[in-house]
Length: 120
Image (cartoon, rainbow, N blue to C red; front, top):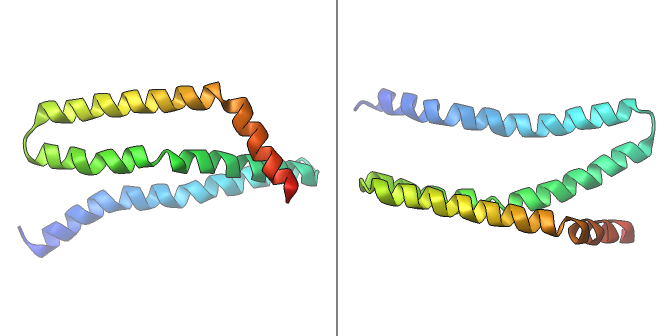
C-alpha cells in the first residue's frame, strides 16, 4: 500500500468526523439565534443553562463510546466476531441502563443543576 493510498484512507475516515465536530457548535448558534428572535434575554439565558446541563450529561456518557470502540476494534482485528457482538450487546444494555437512570432521576438532576445555576 502506497503512502498516498494510506492518506486517502485516513481522509476518508477523518472528514466525516471533522464535519460532525464542526456542525455541533453550529447547532448551538442556531438555537441562540432562534431564542434571540423571541425578543427576551431570559430565553437566551434559559437556553444557555439547558444546553450546559445537556452537554454535561451527554459528554459524561461519552465514556461508553470511547471505552468500547478500542476494545471492539481489537476484537474485530483478532477476528473474534462473537466477542464483537457481545461488546455491542453489553454496550447497549449499559446505554439503556444509563438512559433509565437519567430519566428516572431527571427531576432531582434538574433541581440540582438549576440550584447551582441560581447560586451564581
